[in-house]
Length: 278
Image (tube, rainbow, N blue to C red; front, side, top):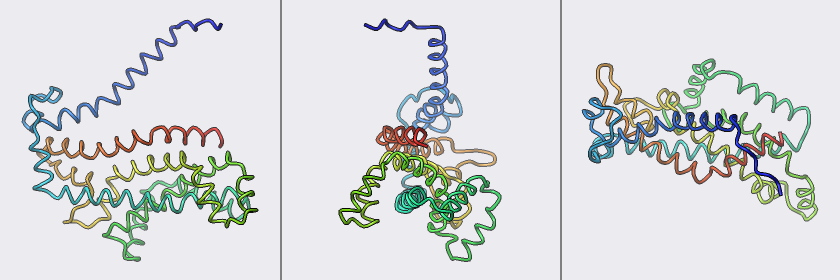
């Protein structure tokens, strides 16, 4: 029998550091939740105290007296539509790059990766002019196109790394049985990419859901935008409605937490497998 491993000081220090980091990361969420159920006056008087009663007027006001419901719909449409096109396009691009090692595919892959190194602020103005040229400025189609195209580099890097662990013999057997190239990918290869797809959905979906700059600049003024932008409108130069801000932030956090809880296992597996196989 193997002797039990004794606990060392390194283990204790590592555990303490882990707990401290966990508390630091959890505290903003905890502070947001307790503040969402307090009035603006209670928040200003004692920010970190627990609410004396569940104050729900902030949620009612947001859902009945503001454009927040329309902003929720815009956030959902923007995120779900972008993720749909990402899942439809990027896995095929990564598959083509990984399975066809030619000069032109290698050039395209390097071109995609090079695009990840250019900061968004460097090409922001030309990009917006391009959206106006194609008539996509001022609608959800503009941010969706930008999100999908901007995620191709990272997505291809993720999928090509994961595809290296899938044996080609599976595809060759299906091809001998008469399956088409698209049939091989969507019926055989794509289901095996589930953990990788979950990783991309969580990472890219979280970024799109919480994005502020793109909807703020591209979507038309005077109309509902996204949840994050609508929350920003309650921040004033001389005063802010903190009860509305925390209530809106709470409503924006809940869907993200639900998705992450259900996809957490596949998310970690996809990142770990991609890192090892890459």
